[in-house]
Length: 235
Image (cartoon, rainbow, N blue to C red):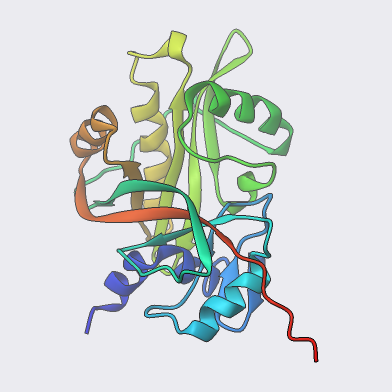
């Protein structure tokens, strides 16, 4: 039997939505999802049943889509895979947080600028209400947001670092590392640990995270799915 931490890391969205982020959970049966303007994820328990997948089509209705994080789960033929991303899950085993005094907290009023920075750099999805999931910090230069990072998934004892990005014209100055150090310091003050996910193809980011003290735990797949319409049973 895997440990509690291992089970949570293998199914991090389910762990978050059934735990620390339960206030966000939209549910049907054992299927859970974040609101579509908060995060693009839904989740099922380990080894989901056919009924679990039917419940999922209630929280992800036909004609819409959402992403599920898994380790090679078999997707029923009644669901269509629109996209797949292979990621490495990394754990902060030997990290030490250091606050960057010039890092500023980012608030709801900063979201338009944050979304524009994400559009320029593509670190992953950042939606209108993603900022509600945790702390976000950034750097400004000449009143322009040039770098940001924040917290996304949260379950017992762990917080995910996400949306780490720097404007293309401001790279090479260690801004991302300093923002991560600030987040890690805050996470450690709460007696929690940090983890993250990074595309397997993003070797520069993987090297950065390894230099900061993260280690690769395991590969995972993010599948963007949409269900087929549920047939009616009229008599």
